Length: 110
Image (cartoon, rainbow, N blue to C red; front, side, top):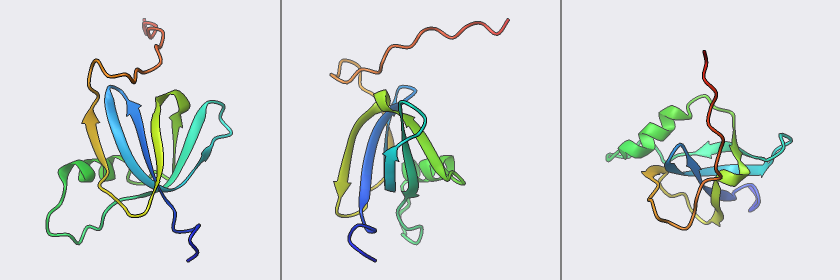
């Protein structure tokens, strides 16, 4: 496996008031305007004795997902990392300097 194939990206983004931190082998700008494609999500080994419930929640949430499309305005940060960390979800703190793009209210279904 070449060095380029072994690249792991840490992608941090906002989703419904929560901060997601995921690891993936491929990311790219999507053909869908304004979206980032995240492919080949990487999670820690299940053979560990101690299992992180947050990572298990993410693993089950993204089970069967081949590709995820994240709006560019939700991206907080993307890093190229040397080794795999723990995927997690945390609450977005109010008063921070990263604010989600304001969206118009959803219309009533009636």
